[in-house]
Structure formats: C-alpha cells, structure tokens
Length: 303
Image 1: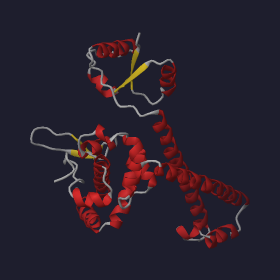
Image 2: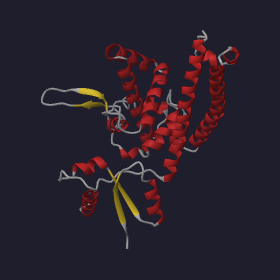
Image 3: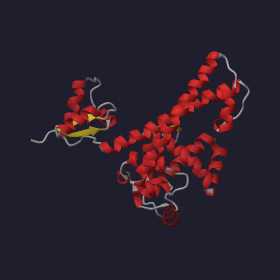
Image 4: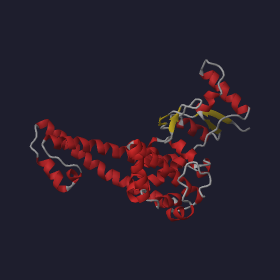
C-alpha cells in the first residue's frame, strides 16, 4: 500500500525527510502561507493543522511546492559556507583596520599587501592590543586558504554544470553567482516569466494599493537572501562593464537614489539570466535574439 505524508514547509525538518525517504514513504511539502489561507477557524492547534493538511490532500487541493534534490541542497551548503567564511574574514579585516587607524595608518586595500602588513606588525602596542592584533592576523591567515579552497571547489562544480557555464558568459557574472542561480532556482520551467523570477528573489516592491491610489514600499526580500545578495553584487560589476547599463544605473540613481538603482539593476540581471537559462543562450545569443529579455513582463524572451 502506498503511503503519502504531507507537511508544511519548514527549515528544520530535514531529519524527518531523510527518515521518510529511508522508509520509502512519499513526502509532500506544502506552502505554509497557502495552507494558512485555507484555514477557516481562528483557533490554531497542531491537531487542527494536521486535520487541515489531511483534508487538503484528500481533496487534491494541497499546495505542494517544488523541493530540491539532496545533492542540490548539499551543494548549496558549499555556497553558504564560503559566504559565511568571507563574512568572517571581512569582520576580521575591519577590526585590523581599526587597529591601524588607532596608530595613524590610513589605508584600505594597501593594508593587505606585503608592505601594509609589515607596517601593521611593526606597531608597538600595549600588551592586550598586541595580543588582539596577533590573534586577528592568525585568524586571517587561517581563513584565506580555506576560502581559496572553497572557491576552487565552486569553479570545479561549475565545470560540471553546462547551465552555469552559459550564465557565466554574461558580464559581471562569476562562477559563484552562476552556480548559485542554477542551484537555488532549480528548474527554469518553474516560472512563466521574468516577473515571477523577480518576485521569487524578493526584488520587487511591497504594494498597498486601493482604488486609484497606488502605494509602493521597500522590496519584499522574499526568497533566498544569498542569491539576492549575489545578484546585487554581480549587477554592480555588470554596470561597470556595459555602457548601456551604466547610463541606466546613473539615470535611476539621480532620480531615485543609489539603493533603488542597485536593486533595479539586480532585478534586470536576474531576469536576463533566467531567459538565458530557459532558452539555452549564452550572452552573445542573448544580445542577438533577446534584446528585450531583460524586461520582467516579457513572457517569451523575444520580441
């Protein structure tokens, strides 16, 4: 007899998924927001939630969502691990910058070159300040090879992924961004148009409109925060690489501010990468066949 289990999406239930997989029990994971929307009673208990999920599954009305494979999710851990290591390194570097500033050494990138490091190590500091400097430098020396190794592993994974290789051809998109886009989006056919991709990544504004009044707020920030961060970073590199993007960015920045301009360019880049993936294009083919593929409302990628 075939057994099927339904549950709301949760970030702390992978052990349960593995258990059911070992028992060869099919698991359906549902959109928690959609399930809540179908609840009639104002009271909420675990028993009532279970009864509602059972009812939805029996009526074939369960809002099932796409679930990435185990291999996909494990590779995402590689991306997150490198991201966290880079964040840790940045915090350490900022603390060392503060030590240098306290001693009158004002430099940014130059501090991490050989000459800058020699200056930093040559300062005569009080005992605990010296201990702090030593510990921070040791942590920094330990993180650099770890990050380099993780970066090399990501590049190797990109070589195994044709979709990520095509996305890398777009100016500003490196191996980390390309691989993250493929792993986190999962399948291009999950979305019908670029507007859905932008909404999925949380780079569309909140809207509270009524009647003839339209009110837009900050971006929703739904979806994967790592991919959203990478898209904003990659879009800034793209702006420096493509003259048309640069002029569009400065035009938006003058009218709406730099923050809004950065998000707008990130949204445009995400939609472009989506169409490149969906159509099987590299960047040259995108320029030739899809000049309007960066428009979120375009459903076909070509005009």
